[in-house]
Image 1 (tube, one colour):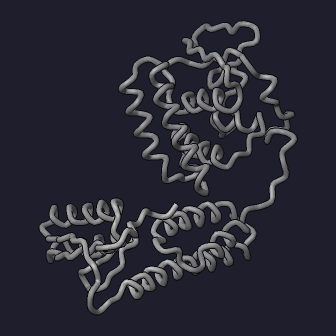
Image 2 (cartoon, helix red, strand yellow; image 1 turned 180 degrees about the vertical axis):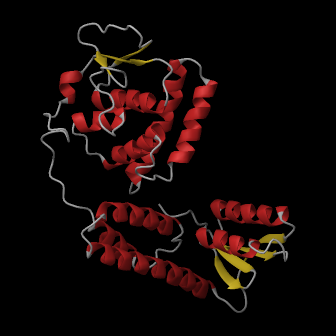
Length: 317
């Protein structure tokens, strides 16, 4: 979804005028990169423009605060173009910038398609880049659809699995309904994510039980996860969340993206290098600090994973 732009008329633009102090020397480059990242267009050496909107105002305010902290100066104003640059010219300049971004994505996808190695990693990288560009494509620049299609062509064709990666037959969620699912108390990222996954996608009527692992003997029919000798726990370098997806043959790309984040946090091996892992890790740590009881952790954690799932479901993971 592209950033929101106010097209209601009147002052259509936000302008940022700024001055950078001579020191520190890196500040000029830092500010320029920040403005480029939010999609601002430079119309003069120290004058940048964005289409008027709440997000644009917040982006400029962050830049202004950064400058003030370093001894610089910035002014933000709403503007209506009267003389010189016209609205149409500014829109065209925004579109040209984004079209150039889309063209580079297409070229990168073409180069990746010519290589046989590591196409999945390149696909993930280009999907993230495409999402970043789309967020600052304020006027629907030409080349967007072609860039998206070029990246999509990198995705390898995967037949529906008939067995887990370990060669075991897939399980059917319908055979695991209204079960009691048991895991270690003091739940953290993997167990919170697994509990959420079980209730939302495998067993909506599940009863969750958090126990001390030492000496626990499961009752008949109970399913243990993320605990020693459990039916669903770490296998090889896969966390329990990944194992559940594999055992039940769940291919949802949004859930696979979440699995990569959970893996990077839980196993601390940066296997997938998910940029979201750091932030999710801090959120999980915070909700665990604020909730000594597992029920509270699960309630807040479920809201977090619902939001992550919605984000990845609507965007490319």
